Image (tube, rainbow, N blue to C red):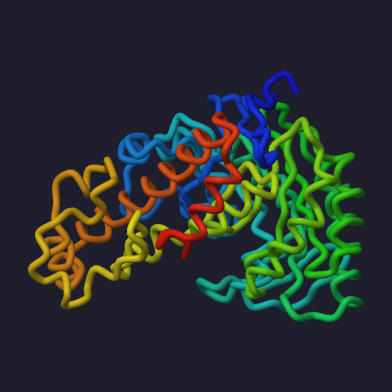
Length: 371
């Protein structure tokens, strides 16, 4: 624990939302924070230099995909993910569990692990908690996630409970096999949409949480009000002395609602994925830049944004790039969308320090950004 710490810098008197400082071996992270996703050791279309310029503090990479290619042993030989991809700030890796259950074609799930076929070439692989820890230890990220079973939205309570119990057993095995003191292991709270299972998962995961805990299995198809209800149930029971990470959430409305419910960390492919299809997140709401209405629009994408895209290019030019399938279009919109979300976290931190985050959230809900 000498390499990790978390302290609350300020808690909003109006709402209870908090600003914190999370110390890792590769630097300090000020929360609330949005983490861009670099699935295959790259945030699509963006260099590490650009990510720093848009104020990204930490990025996420994917254990499953890096195991498949180029292989965790190769990354380890390169000096770990930081050296391999040229990023000197913190990195988080997931365990690969979500991809094993959702992307790969499953053969069999047992208490021992998961036998599955690669989505690339059909080859067979077997993931266990110990294998997940071996891969994540080799990748060398600062924050690593426990191997878990994320049950599908809509399953009955009996199956959700079975998946939860398996996740708790796997957590113990992850904890026992994890050995790198320069990496912190986050347990993942599961339990689907059942409040009693969520509370049990949190209670039984906390003993394994040394400086961080994650909430998984939300934003997987359920209505947002259901997600918020689960978050409301969990909020009073979180440990106070560590960051809380809501996995796979990245829309502006969910970030604001999440911070209001005690969340510190978020990640999602949304800003870069939608950018590649020509959609921008702006202070005026969602902009589908390929639309004909922008053909002769020579104004900035977002007049309130300080990013390179908004300071130098017009909607008309961006529309041309996207409709012509030029790579630069995806790069500029990705750059902007990530900066939009990092600016949003900066705005939220300012409101928390001003003890007015409740007012900020109310105003945000009435704005075109709330989508």
